[in-house]
Structure formats: structure tokens, C-alpha cells
Image (cartoon, rainbow, N blue to C red; front, side, top):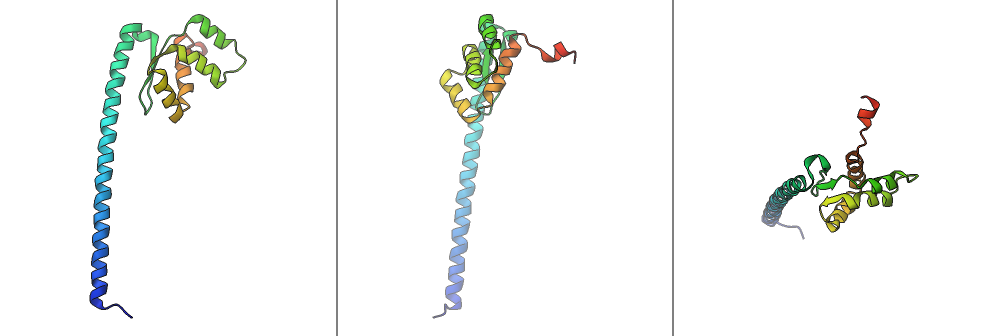
Length: 146
């Protein structure tokens, strides 16, 4: 049995209404997620600014380094000379070696939060280790004359 013109028009109207309702709901969710993301980003930025100010006060601006990530900043301080020498004496820098260099220098965030950042963005460890090495006095551009 074929549908009448009226039945088809009613189905078309109902389908269009369902689509408009679904699109409106999706749009509302997208806006809400965007607002949540903005709030979280601002809260992270405020926390980072407070942590940087405290670290500069505690250690001095020249003795800390800040690595910014999408998940918040990581602040490290200058490494202990013995720790740095032990790191340099390794044949190669494996992940565990980088961690043993970085973790004692970690000022912010706490170890649990740092682990969460590394879980999401593992290359952060390399970036932070580079900053620790820089704080130890290694200046490749200055040494090479560039």
C-alpha cells in the first residue's frame, strides 16, 4: 500500500523537526563544551601564574625554567651538581635517566600531576629535561658561537 501525499508530507515535517532538534541540542552541547574549555584554560593559566610567581620568589627567576603544556606548566629548578654529573656520565639518556634528572628538580606540579601530563604528552619529559640541562649551564648556541 502506498502512502498518501498527506502522510508523506507529515513524515517529512516530522523528520525535519527531529533533525532541527538534534542540531539545536548538538549546538548547545558544543557551546557548553567550549565554555567549559575556556574556564578550565583560565583556571590553569591562573594556577600557572601563581606557581611561577612562587617559584621565582623561592628560587630566583634565573634558577628556574618553565615549560608550558596544554595541561599546565611544568617548573623545574637548577639541578644539584652531583645529580647532573651522574646524568652526564651515562652512556645514553634513556627515559629512566631523564626522569632521574628531572624529578628531583621538579618544583611544579606535584609528581602525580606531572605523571598525568607525561601520560597525555610523553615528549614533555624531553622538553623538561632540556630545560634542566640548560639550567645546569649548558648553552649550545653560546658554545658554538651562533
